[in-house]
Length: 338
Image (cartoon, rainbow, N blue to C red; front, side, top):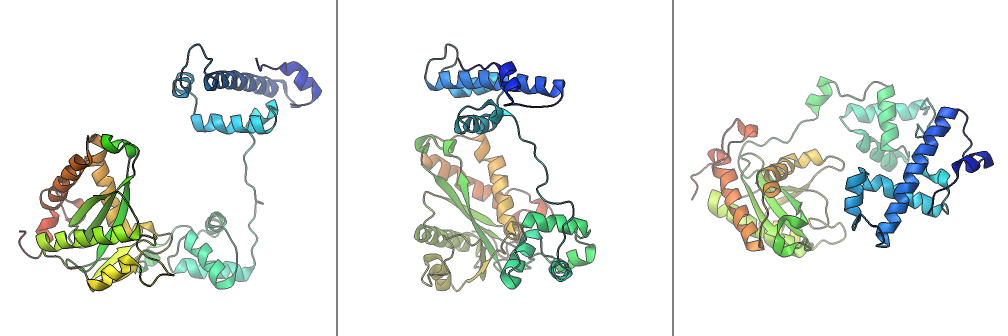
């Protein structure tokens, strides 16, 4: 048993708190934590009379696993000091006023006026002026200066990527598939590789089992050929993030870069800290999760691939899309579909 005489501990000064009510609440909290820790250790040692696995214990007690383990680790590290089980007061770690030099504040105002967010401001200050201010501190300063929200004029200057013809720009991205989606490969990582046309929203997705650069390059080539064959779309530019599967600053012969060069496609990259730049493909991942992946469990990989193929056709040629005035993507293709 790991129960402790709290009265003696309190008198010894281990938990010295002023105010009877606060001390009572702490004793109750610690008693409850110690009871849970005792049961937890019994389950771990396979000696508990009611629970066989920890999931049953967490569910029955209504315990947040992550929060409980945080305090349990504190308890063990502190050599089972009961005071480690008391939640620590959380508050602002900085002074009330953020006092920066006037020239630093002016630099922040200038960068903000260009439409940059807090992450970009922090990054530019570090790169250009060797000034280190965290993104969170930058945001608090923006709030203090009352420029945390862009005014309409600046918003208009920060223009979105808008294309007027199919093939002008493609978005490419990789999406992780939950492990329990395919029963045949419960412990194997599977991914979706997708390319979407910026103008028409024509999209094609394939299932892949590796995100190594060479594999991504070949699968992308496969997708581009299928989009070309079925919808006659030839991309001029391709937008990707800065992941190693798409680029490498130290490797001019990167497989993905070489593949794009072969097809005469210009490679563009999303801006750091701006995932919304690739928002069209990101929104597609949410859609396919909601309409297909989260509602189905597939027996085999071939079954999943079959359903993905069907969803490609459905999404492009039958599903109405709010982003293009409730039209189907195929309606914006500039030639009949094969």
